Image (cartoon, rainbow, N blue to C red; front, side):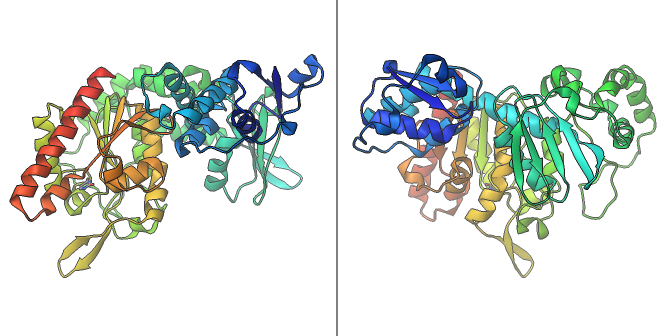
Length: 475
Ligand code: URA
């Protein structure tokens, strides 16, 4: 039996190095015991030390596996190291094993990764800082209780978002600290170490009560997006029950006082009432994305065109970026490509109202030509910057199937570029195990000059969509 002592519960590099060495030597998964920290000491000396095993012949694994492993390893499931090692051994002889979506090991690992992504998202959404006066000046401190070992993985988000503040996020297992230039981690602490009250809290509660929109109240959705266990660390949570109770009266008042003029589409510079949505919901993400400045494309576009469709959609379609008409309307796929898409969906028996449609890049990229705005392909930097939104949409939607329409969508979904022809129609998976199908973008059909070829390609596209419909039903 080989016993591997990992440095901590989230020690991905320790697992990777040991797993690589063991797998190269062909060590059977049943002959490896994975242990964390002091656990190994209970069993005396390790036999034989992994580092002394000779290096066996190298083999390649799909890139998606490393991404999956890096995420799934953060799960609290004590079997995660062993499960990942079993998968690695399988990939040694079957390079495409991860693509078997119905395989129990592949599904289980996908579920672990999904739970971790979701926990990271919850941490991003539900951490609330409180101001604390220290000798070195003002510092912001938050208490959070993650389900999985995610503090290190979640912390860079807070560095980006609160770069100029000094802050600490305290959790029972690990703490993250940012002093304005260096991110450090320390051991976990008890809840008592986190401050309970401060002046910001009262202000935050006033703000929350003011932006709470009773007409959009969906208590069920609020509870599922903001589970009760997080409430005790959210100052605004104490208001929720009373706001829910008064929602019916307040929305009746809002209707009475509603303006009679129709709403106009959003325009820059116009003061609008602050919209609101339950933290951690798709709507909250959409509102956040409305102010996106993650790449320069926001500067010339009219608005962010966020995805649309039901939050429980089984299928998510991802396009490239909004076109001229989408940019003006603020909705995806409403222009010429959208019409081709709608017809094909209908022929394939897919109800557009039941699916979620979004884009890899959420601002229109164009060059002006007289009065026209000519579409420009987004570059890798823009696609990567916008993955920020796409990934969060997928975490919240948890679809049964994702469809990449064209190569930009595929790049946005996988983070790396690959020719569409090499993967079209194949059963692919995202890093978290969600099934992925790639097909052409509907505008490809619009651009084909030859009518015969156009008809041939339209039939192929329809065939892909029919397959999508069948897979979504089976999943
Ligand atoms: N093309 C896309 O990729 N997305 C849209 O929303 C419209 C056209």
